[in-house]
Length: 192
Image 1 (cartoon, rainbow, N blue to C red):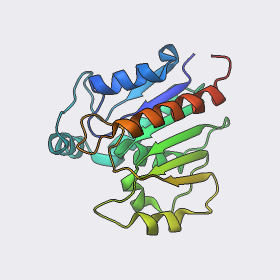
Image 2: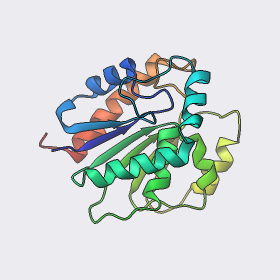
Image 3: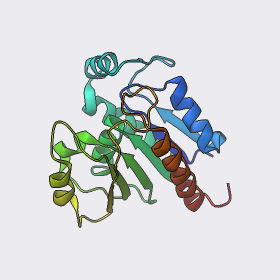
């Protein structure tokens, strides 16, 4: 029974993303959604990945793909998204209704700034980085604070701290949030 859906950033389902998922554990109960259509298609530089992501339709196309995956797996209990994938997931959760609640963890969803008028219908833990070069993180957090189903934390790390292909990767933060995700999943899947 599928319980966890991982939504990648613009790099796609890379070998290091697969290592991350395996490190979290419980790999028999999960699926991965990537912005790219071919299995094994990924990019090692951010510039290449971003151009491919835009070419494949950007956040809107990715949101459509994520919504289809959520509909395909009604037994999901937790969703974990990164960067553009987290932003697209936030958009989906703000537009889609489900009978059963989902818990969600979103890492550095920078495009969420374009969806500040949306409110998710399921619990979202949002982890914002220390700063973003294109907007003021503090202003976005202020605009989103107090919203139903939204819990926000801002960390001292940069956007991309969980992705080993990112120039902003931080091993200490990665290890910390690996444990954080394991604890979150244990709470929503206690018998797994």
